[in-house]
Amino acid sequence: MIESYYNTHNPILPPEHHVPDSEAHVMPDGKLYIYGSYDNRDDVYCSEEYHVVSTADMQNWQVHEVSLRGEDIPWFNDPDAPKFPGIDWTHPTPFIRKMLAAKGADGMKEQFENQENTVKPPILFAPDCAYKDGKYYLYFCMPDDSEGVAVSDSPTGPFTGPVQLPVGGIDPAVFIDDDGSAYYYWGQLFSHGVKLNEDMVSFDPENIVDDLVTEEEHFFHEGSSMRKIGDTYYYVYANIEHGKPTSLGYATGKSPLGPFTYRGVIIDNAPCDGASWNNHGSIECVNGRWYIFYHRCSRGRELYRRLCIEPITILPDGTIPEVKMTSQGPGKPFGSAETLWGYQACEVHGKLFIAPDETGSECLTNIHGGDEAVFRYVKSEKGFHRAELECRGKGFVELLLDDQKVGEASIRDSGKTTIVLTGSGNFSTEQELRLRMTESDQLEIISLTLFE
Image 1 (spheres, rainbow, N blue to C red):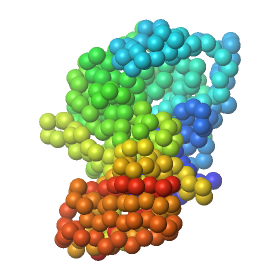
Image 2 (image 1 turned 180 degrees about the horizontal axis):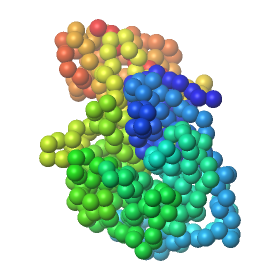
Image 3 (image 1 turned 90 degrees about the horizontal axis):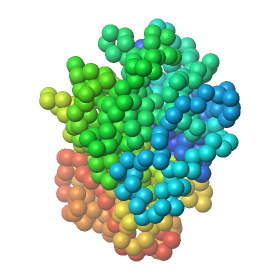
């Protein structure tokens, strides 16, 4: 069954849908389709199925039925299937060595050398999709380092007839140039690219180009994605410049296979959760405006990642200024009487995180004294003069607009608490809203609503 939702804010989908690793494409019908993994497990990234997300207007969203299942991939866990080299974990990059130095020799061995071909669940990792000559080609990868492609007549699938590709690794990406030539990218720690044959499901391994972008020169970690703007090719990927692969960075070149020059970070999701570890996404032009599609984790885990979107700007010199994560997303700032749900916080600081409460609804929980939650952005022509906070438990909360304290409340009972705001003034520009919890006794924040 197709599920439909109206929303213009982050996260884009309701809390029950976790779609990370988003590759966004406007297809020939003019609609935007997002191809990503689907987090629904406690023990590992992703799951054994894909669901395509689509929209015609960046407001009304559809989560489609399963487009591909891991159990339908014939070579997975087949001992007789071809095996192609993936990452050489016995030779980790300088970043990985530094990251795991605290683990010692045993940790290094566990991370890099314990890669036996044991039976694994048929997990589907990050995909990508392209349209050519009436067909949609879905490229995917699995935990045995195998990669493949399946085909459909529809952008939402189902995708059938999977074919294994003669490479090993993760995070496939596909790009079709203006002349119709198609290119395939993949890799973790080490990037690779090759021109596809006309059939979109094969290529000459002799033509593979290695190290298109590197850790040392471009801060590359994983998650390749390619776009073209004018005559410039934009290679977007998970970037380690800020210490972990929580950023999406980019490099540019004049050829789809490089060389590429490093340009910087577009967005960093590190403050979305204390456990945030990775990012993976893409850029796409929708109705004349460019956006970055990325994910944020939750529940104090690296898992349960959520689809988020931010508008970006391509400057005349081709650079993309870094943007902050927002609760606003692709829509307008939150206005008077518009509820901000706890799970829409774009940053958390301290020990708190976003997770389901005892009812199954998502809220800000695990709150300790000194924790903060940030919502970007709110806006009122008349100024906000009252707030209504819905909580459980007890505590003390301060409200700040652009770092100016405008109200506070002692929460003594579960339910709604009204707060009179002072100093909020008459603002006609967007503002950052910050909740500072100075005391907490099992405090949980469900929602906040501002009123003029």
